[in-house]
Structure formats: C-alpha cells, structure tokens
Image 1 (cartoon, rainbow, N blue to C red):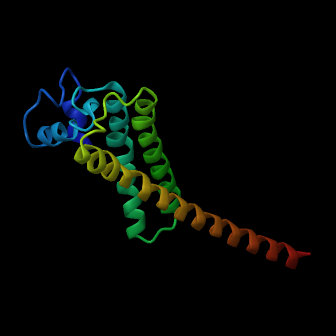
Image 2: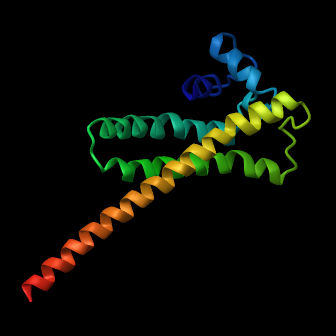
Image 3: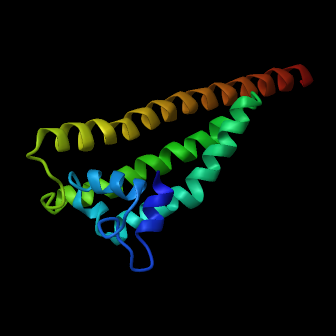
Length: 155
C-alpha cells in the first residue's frame, strides 16, 4: 500500500491530484489526515523508508520464520522498532502542533482511520518486539548457562 502512495507523492505529484484505485484509497484516508493527500515531506520520507527498507527486511524476516531460523527475532526487533519510530514520527509532531491536519471531529475519521487503523501498527509491533526480545534473552541465558557449565568442568 505504501509503494503506490510514495509513487503518487514524488516528482510533483500528490495523491489529491492523482487518479486510480490507490489514489482513491489514499484520498479517502486523507480525509482523516490531510498530510497524506498533499505529499507532506515528513510523511513521504517515513513511507519511502517503509517501501525501500522495511518491505525487503520484512520479506527476509518472513523467509527466516518459514525456515524456522531463530535469527528472525533479531530482524523482527529491527522491524518493530522501525515501525514504532515511524508511527511516532508520523503522529507525535502533528499532535505537538495541535493536530491541524487530523480530523478529530468526525467519528469515522477519528476512531476508525486514526485510532483503530493506526493503532494496529503500534499494538502488533509492540507485542512482537516484546515477544522477540524475551526469546533473545532466553537464548542468551541458555548460551551463558552452557558457557558457565563448560568452564566449571574445565576447572
């Protein structure tokens, strides 16, 4: 979804001045957050990072999960942190400037588009980050325990 948004928001284009299926989807969302319709540089920058870095990293991480390779936890932590930081940089500066681009009066725009739709991108990465961090800590503890046991046997 972010790929078409970035394409529609660079080289003088904007979502609001574009036509087509993806343009209409982003135009609908821009009713809740007007920055998405006008190629806001902050939003386009965050989404370009999503397309160019997080997308390929997510595919690689999914491949590791399918192969049951426990290294996926490391990449998943990076992905989750990038997602949470992107969410932070998308909304906190806007709230600090009185949320002028956000429609907080229309219940559909506020609750469905802004809270629920964007909340998913905070709750799920937050949960996965904690889960992977715990798994990595267990792995480190297991390796540390083996090292302690082997060093005691050597003495």
